[in-house]
Amino acid sequence: MKLGDLQLSPRHLINGRWEIGTTTGISTNPSDTREVVAEYARADRNQTELAVRAAADALPTWSQSTPQRRADVLDMIGSELLARKDELGALLAREEGKTLPEGIAEVARSGQIFKFFAGEALRIQGELLASVRQGVQVDVTREPVGVVGIIAPWNFPFAIPAWKIAPALAYGNTVVFKPAELVPACGWALAEIISRSGLPAGAFNLVMGSGREVGQTLVDHPLVNALSFTGSVSTGDRILRAASARRAKVQLEMGGKNPLIVLADADLDQAVDCALQGSYFSTGQRCTASSRLIVEAEVHDAFVARLRNRLASLKVGHALERGTEMGPVVDDNQLAQNLDYIDIARNEGAEHVWGGERLERPTPGHYMSPALFLARPEHRVAREEIFGPVACVLRADDYEHALALANDTPFGLCAGICTTSLKRAMHFKRHAAVGMTMVNLPTAGVDFHVPFGGRKESSYGAREQGRYAAEFYTTVKTGYMLA
Ligand code: TXE
Image 1 (cartoon, rainbow, N blue to C red):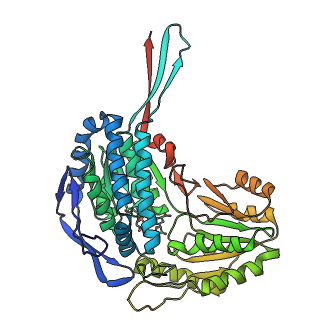
Image 2: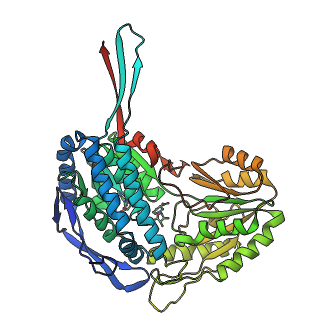
């Protein structure tokens, strides 16, 4: 059976059983909208509550399981993801629209994430301290937070769920996972592997459906102790307000408007590569995408000319077609939003350099050409997250001006610089007001074993990934004992 080619009928996983939904929905292939990828079960409030109860009931068993058992479960999931990366990568490309190589790489990374947290389950640490009181011993230990609600976006349908689910389970929590409505088949394929990994029934549950009903039920449910969310700023804000009102732990990863600075001393070909990859690969649908290219005046025109040439030959097409460099936009709404921003940019007086048009391809899909504008800092195209293949160039007088422009944003996820000056690179790493910096690398493309997250409006709560994930998925207990 090859999931990459089939029409699937994903069901919910609730308390170890596959359940039909109260209604059904469909997901389609953005490269060929005639093709239905999945006809999937959609849950209502009651079904979501059953999943939460199942997770709560499984908590005593799973939270007391041995680190070895947790490591075995996570390692098995990781191994299967790696072994099936081609097949699952094809499913991802079909349902979300990133190119096949991008899809395969994402599934492989998801497998590595599970394997990393298999190791972390064996390395849960505490502290033993001398007390300030005579004869007393103090220890600090980590315990699971409890039931974790995981609400995921569509743009990384394997990797983002993986980097939330794997640490949740590694540290002994139980999970209710809600994938985004555009990518239920990917969510289900991951859940199907997890369902065969040896977890007790109810330790991991999948419920699909709308954010308003399924997502909101998780946010409001008193038995959900922690919520990890990736998505838009507006939804993140709503979740934060509701969840913190009932004192649940919350972690949010939201938007970005990430700058890439190109200084006059940069290797220009390398800088153009960084801009091309960071701004347009994965169709620009990454929170780490570089959508503001801040270029020092001396090399501005040369940089723009080279990037324009690269865009002119970028192959936009069906995600599964060999040689495609940029797949379609995920759906009609996102495409309409991208095209609206093209109009806004033109109307506000940004200078159009390339692209931004709807494209026809042999199959009916949501295709558009990569867009580039010369903008001013006040233009909306330079301030708001578009989440598509649309970037703008801002002209900077010098390094100090470039840094000020880079930090002039409500977001603070990632920032990059292309330079051959070690002094400038070091200064930039220290003064960029973000959670992640890149030197001579695209802003998008991160490792899986180190923290991921940002500042300002981009993120809220403890960092994701790496061993820092323990901050969110555990709670510490301080023990005193008269020795
Ligand atoms: O996001 P939402 P959408 C941005 C991007 C995109 C826009 C909309 O600009 O165009 O957001 O995308 C669930 N309670 N990003 O609609 O609505 C929802 O079902 C609980 C940037 O996909 O934030 C889905 O599972 N959950 C971002 C998840 O939240 C709710 C990545 C995300 O959906 C809910 C994705 C509610 N009330 C979108 N409402 C990035 N920067 O990485 C919705 N959801």
